[in-house]
Amino acid sequence: MRILLILILLTNTNCIGQEKLGNAEVVELRNYEKDDEYFPHDCSMESDMLDNAIELDKNGNILTIKNIANDGFTGHSIKFQLNSQLEVKKAEYAEWTDALDGSSTNYTINRVELKLNSDPFKNNSLIGYYTFYMTGHYKAGEILKKEGVKDEIFNREIKGKFNTNCKK
Image 1 (cartoon, rainbow, N blue to C red):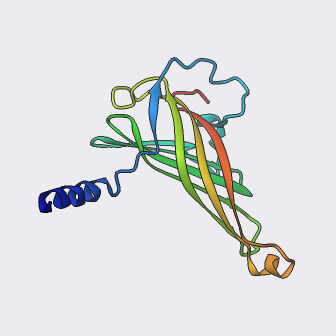
Image 2 (cartoon, rainbow, N blue to C red):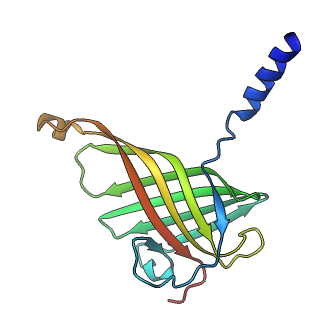
């Protein structure tokens, strides 16, 4: 009985921090340039305010992909990490605006769907499409609370795409 209890405790301890948010699927991707519901992150978005709309960072068996959009008034940052088995192990989403009312929204990523044109550990020329399914936690600022705005929790879906080999 003690051995069984020890095995259960060890198994539970090993699972902590090993959450998988999804798997990347390698598929044939065409027509990246077409208009669709996916927000583009590529060199066409780069400007004086944004040097890199997409960043890739390989560190051993972990690949970090970061997408950024910033027009000077609003923006967002999307970041996710894949392991060499193409499992999405970590994901983050943040957004900002120039409206200073004290409000804030934090997001918890529940699930990620990711399609890539090739294995990112074998090829640096990537095209990807993703959907983040997340829960938003909105906290109204003091100014808005005085007007009756309440804190809320809501579900949200963000669709994005990236291309590391586009031409300006």
